[in-house]
Length: 346
Image 1: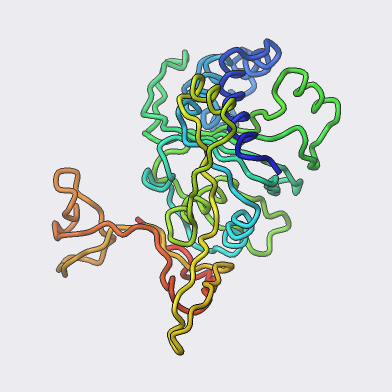
Image 2 (image 1 turned 120 degrees about the vertical axis):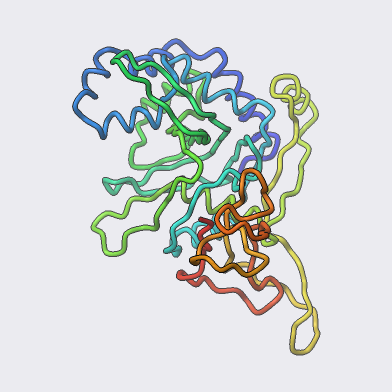
């Protein structure tokens, strides 16, 4: 298992190696922007959407690598323990409610998360893919001339990048390719990168399907929601001084935040004795706006007015923001209830 010094070193290394990437890495991503690639996409809305989601608004392979690199600078660095990963995965697998990706959901505007164990997810073909890290950062609204007579535009959102490690074995592992990545100084490399507009929706897995593909973004979103509750706590660790100094000079940061399950004792409701809280299951509500007073218009979800954030844009009544929280943090062991796991925030 990697130490916090190892995690900070990986974070720094990714930022530096993407600033001066191996020419073979640049060539690989330049091919996505070639005329041949553009011809292949013509007439295929699905391929165009996939290209847009992964690469927009970059116009070259080098621009794409810079776009992935920039959010790493001064980004809070997190290390997630296997225990926390297990709780998140159980919740992710049992959730049946729709989730909305909101700007307030990530624990920080930019970030880099290292997983102490590889996260295995199933793709649309039924194969298991290992991921080791995530990074993210805001991607504001962009416009660009596509060269085909129209402008493409994207609303504000964020870019999420998934990273894989050459040491992790999955169904796509190729020993030759793994050695090649290590030779190019990219033992940890880009697995996928995607643009995610704020307010986008993710759905649960499809019951009874022959192949049930996973949604790694939904898993990450579930982790973020847990990090906003009292179930988890983030403790800062100071890595070894030499690596901390190198990271401070390169990244502008030198700390690692370790995400842990909170260890607390509460009084039992019946006999008053102190006992451990069982966080192995969880029932929490996603953050949302709530009305503070009654209203006389059709039932609706509270939403803040841009002119008066403390009032609802629909009925103009007073509202308040409720953070993600555990519904019964001091009670009996909590259970996962699929129908009420997430409170949709829109």
